[in-house]
Length: 140
Image (tube, rainbow, N blue to C red; front, top):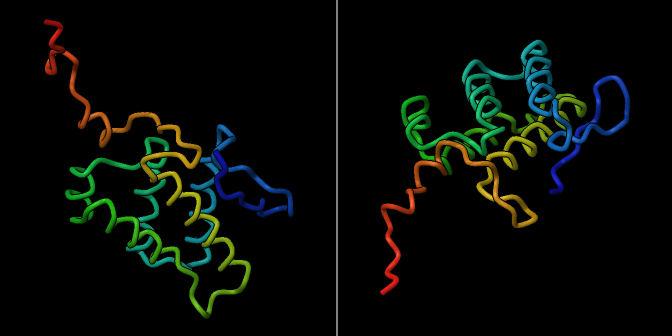
């Protein structure tokens, strides 16, 4: 899987977000950095934090999205992209930072990986699966 690569805040060496075990922690640190710089509104912070919390599971299920944000999955991704959209007044480093975080989170929320493999089952996927016993196979 080839996900966007972020640059470390302290150097120009890339950090492969999703391939490293700490990619969620890196997303949290990136989000906290943006909050400290006050370049995200409180609503933006809420959306980004929710996206990070559910990213390891391929995103949240429709129930959590409806209860927490009152939107569908597609609409939530649009809101996430808007929350992390670079603003004209943002310095170039902040714009790049927002773009990287947005790309990593949107990719993590995709139901399937780019390489065609499936993400681990999150709640939204597990709810769609039914035991084989509910779908008997006719062997006769």
